[in-house]
Length: 120
Image 1 (cartoon, one colour):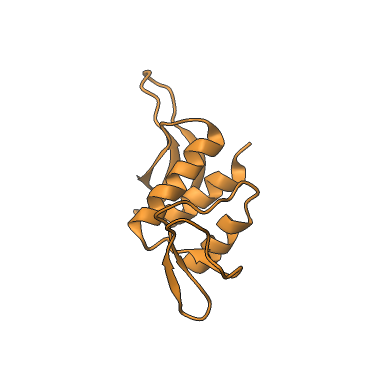
Image 2: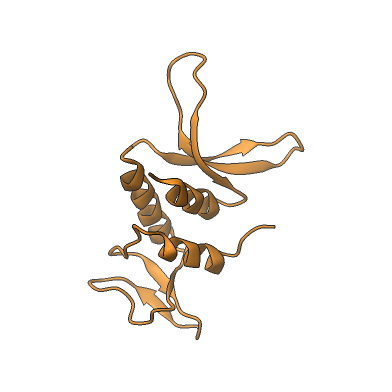
């Protein structure tokens, strides 16, 4: 079952290295939200809004920082059943070298959060 964006947000905030970054959008359980300008949200229940492109960019930056690899990106890989899965990793340019995968999921945010959780 695909995780909701709010569930993924809770998992991301629970990650040991989580930090709010300028430009991230967030949502609160009461339907509020906003954009991080200079301080984290006041609500301890706020989660990142992964529907916002700026938040996804910040999430990718956190993944790259956590792994210490600036080349990490996400792409959709085909599956045997004709669908696709999001993969967070790096492509190798050497012939016959398989890509390195750090996380995967049914949506891009899920692949990135899985990569955060797997970071050393």
